[in-house]
Amino acid sequence: MFWQQLINGITLGSTYALIALGYTMVYGIIQLINFAHGEIYMIGAFVGVVAVTVFQLNIFIALFVAMTVCIIIGVSVERIAYKPLRRSTRLAPLISAIGVSIFLQTLMTLIAGPQAVGFPQVINDQLYHIGSVTVSKVQVIILILASALMVGLQLIIKYLRIGKAMRAASEDYDTASLMGINVNRVISFTFALGSALAAAGGVMVGMYFNSIHPLMGVMAGTKAFCAAVLGGIGSIPGAMLGGLFLGVAEVGGVALGYGGYRDAIAFTLLILVLLFKPTGLLGRPIQRKV
Amino acid sequence: MDSLLTNYISPYYIKIFTLVGIYIIIALGLNFISGVTGQLSFGHAAFVSIGAYTAAILTTRLQLPFLPSLLVGGLLAAVVGILLGFPILRLTGDYLGIATLGFGEIVIVVFQNMDITGGTIGLSGIAKNTSLSLVVLVVIFTIWSMYRLENSRFGRALMAIREDEIAANVMGINITAYKIQAFGIGTFFAGIGGGLYAHMIQYLNPTDFGFSRSFEYLTFVVLGGLGSIPGTILGTTVLTLAPEFLRFVAEYRMMIYGALMVIMMIFRPRGLLGGVNLSKKIRALKNKKKTTIPSDAR
Image (cartoon, rainbow over all chains, first blue to last red):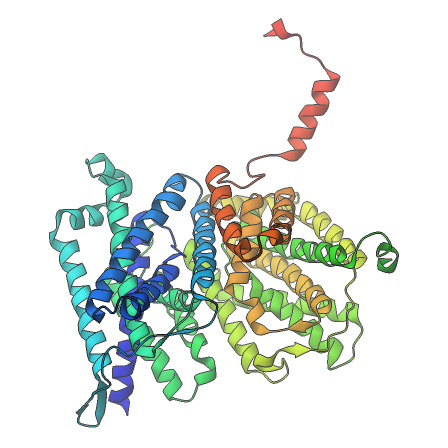
């Protein structure tokens, strides 16, 4: 029972982690809570459905298509709605992000209709039994894909030139730009990476729950953001840890019989963690200079 | 009073204006927290819901008169705000915002699981006690108290905290105590607005007070001009009326609303009246009329 819930929790948590990575990377560099990120995740899921049903693509190709489309949308959103506001007050880009979020939600509701859309069963419902634990094939695929994407992200950030530039920009934005790093390119690349991961998360959630909805990005996005803050916003391992932690806690809470409080579990945990570690589990302490 | 008004204005407009008034009360409360004191709150709708539910439960289940219930709703929202403020106002900036967002969601889930609030079905059968004239009176009272608060020793301390916490602390301002008091005042007005809202809409559902609603209030304040009372009033009025005027575009309404938010922020990142000091402007205009400076005096 415990191991079963743990596996379910990790599966859910890894999708949260994929979305949380986008929040944390963007926040790390431009200190913006990108509220439109949940919508990118939702669009990713819808593109996945269209690719699988209308174009009859293989699910992995569909995943790739969804990621590509979302990269284009994510980067354009940054160019249009955030870039002109880079040097203004803290709250202006935030409001702009909320505007983008409302815009994309309504756009998708107009295109797809307000009701939930079924995600076709693309992977047969084969079950694997390991001891007392039952794992479905979908879960295995989600876990493998999510780990592969996260490892890939780590490699990009650790070893590629642009990854180094990202780390430099998140360390100190102004100094990085003085050192000849093209900060605008770094920011675009960060949005591209985040959007691709969110799209992958969207398709995976569609595969897992077999149903997607134009408003699905709101709650998932907020929870993923909680995961990012929980782990320590700006920290990439923190986002992964936070996502997994949140997924496990949520599934565990429902298993213990608090199903009615499902959505409150994430937020309660978040507040508790913030009270004891104000910058999250793996966050750097805030430095106050006079 | 309202029945007299209906002879001249259609009930539809009365409803819209009442709503604008209620939102102004709520938004001014948020402006006090986020604009004057500089503490980010993403959970303002939760305090509105506490006021709304308290007042509605008192009038429907306990048959209490409307005005005392309204006041109790506001006070309870303030008490919850103060109790919440003690632990979380130690957080700063975005972290505080996120903690308040989390709190807001918790409140909704709690209301959904309570019996007395009607759970997920919602609370209906609330009497229609809110009238436009009452709302106007409360709006005037709110604006007056906001001006008095801002221009007091207390308000100056809050602004000092907003500008620089460390400097304010060094000047002998007890930051935590002031922040908590400001939070209590802001949430009190949220609760009052909530009670008025409940007795106007006559039906409450926890999902009506989610974080998207909190962001809506924040948008009112930021688009008008953070920290500016006329700005908050203008922002609230424009953004509440915009969806009504956009009805002719039917289903594209919310899309245009979202796009408008982005465009307005790009062109006026500090809000419509941000950085504009109205009283100074008026004084400058008056002075111009009185003393005409010869052009070669410089």
